[in-house]
Amino acid sequence: MGNPHRILGIGDNTVDTYVSSRTQYPGGNTVNVAALARRLGARSAYLGCVGDDAGGRLVRDALMAEGVDVTRLRVRPGENARAFVVHDQGDRRFLGSHPGVRAQYRLTDADFDYVAGFDLAHSSVYSGLEAELPRLAAAAQRLSFDYSNRWDEAMLRDTAGLFDAVFLSAAHLHEAACRVLLERCIGHGARCAVATRGAAGALAIDAAGQLHAQGVFPAEAVDTLGAGDGFITAFLLARLDGRPLPDCLEAGARFGARVCGWHGGFGHGRPWEGEGAHHLERAP
Image 1 (cartoon, rainbow, N blue to C red):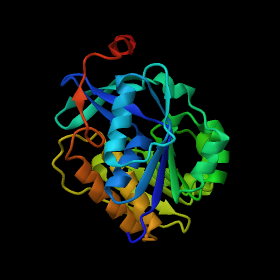
Image 2 (image 1 turned 30 degrees about the vertical axis):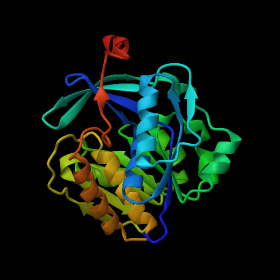
Image 3 (image 1 turned 90 degrees about the horizontal axis):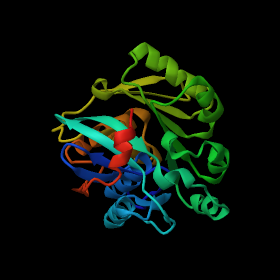
């Protein structure tokens, strides 16, 4: 990129806590997108809040080490968000989580002004900003959104039209069902909709209505935790470059495979000394 794109991650962050190896990593969809976009050459920033504990410091320090702008990162008294993960042969299973101070996060007028200075802002269903999405979409030059696997028809109807690109985790759906889902997103106003399907690859459709499929690339799967966020990041940067949808899918798949080669969403692991373990004990 001659003039690097400006990318902003807004909302969720967490500390991915690997219980068996007693290691913790900075993470969360929008943090990962900001950090990975920086690795791919973009100018990126993160807008959100962290706790004043060791977990919050881990997230902040990792973002700063990656060169992500954290000028508007807010620190709140209390525990940082944390997710508990079991790592099994390169794949992962979540045992539980707690939102920490992230649940207190709200955007200010100054934040909305800040958003307008980026080529693209990205948020997620885990960010808890649903009520502010219309204003966020109005402020942003482009807004993308990760529904993960937490969508329903009402949510898609009410929000999909706000976004330039939407992403849905749909490994549990067969191809025909994925196509219906993506067409619904486009019908509700999204300019582009992508379903990631794990080992089955990805499907995407844009406003023209043509479905495109992308397979996975070989990967040495050290850890799959950040693969989906890597896919999203490279896809979005290719889209900002004006590349056609099949090229965006290929860029996402290639980089997602690369992300499988390191631990956590983007590395920066530290030993876990049991912080937040009381939340794990209460997890269902």
